[in-house]
Figure 1 (cartoon, rainbow, N blue to C red):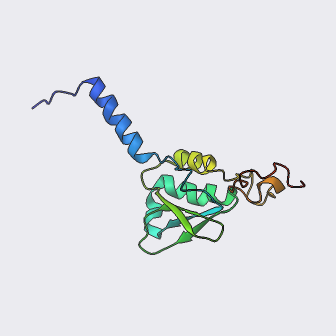
Figure 2 (cartoon, rainbow, N blue to C red):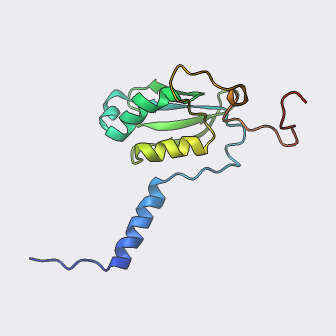
Figure 3 (tube, rainbow, N blue to C red):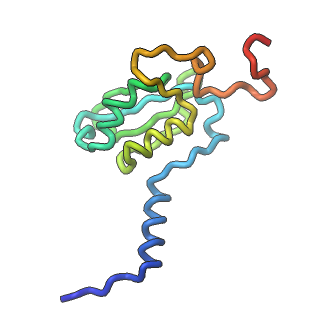
Amino acid sequence: MHLPLPPPALLLLLAALAAAVTTFRPDWNRLHGLARARVEVRSDSLVLPQVKAFVTQDIPLYHNLVMKHLPGADPELVLLGHRYEELERIPLSEMTREEINELVQELGFYRKAAPDEPVPPEYLRAPAKPAEGAPDRPDL
């Protein structure tokens, strides 16, 4: 039995819908005061090759981003404020390593070239944004 294929326009629509569901777009109003983040994972979720690659190879390169093992936790990026208050949870299971890296960088996390490289002074508080009306230069 041979089933007819859906028209190409329908396939494109379905692909766009799938991408929209898996791609997180930050709501900057909710993320005011974003200062740090942690990736929560359980050991068996590290069988997801994209998440495992991000956790083992990329997290050590980011400033103010850590990993935390939790029993029963689906892999999530937990965005935190200055007082460690939770601002947002972003599921990572359906994201590729590249998408996770793009998201973390879009959120303003500083990525070092090597894990032991020092963080430049202007990025020590990254991804926190300066308060509105604050001078751009820290010495003013």
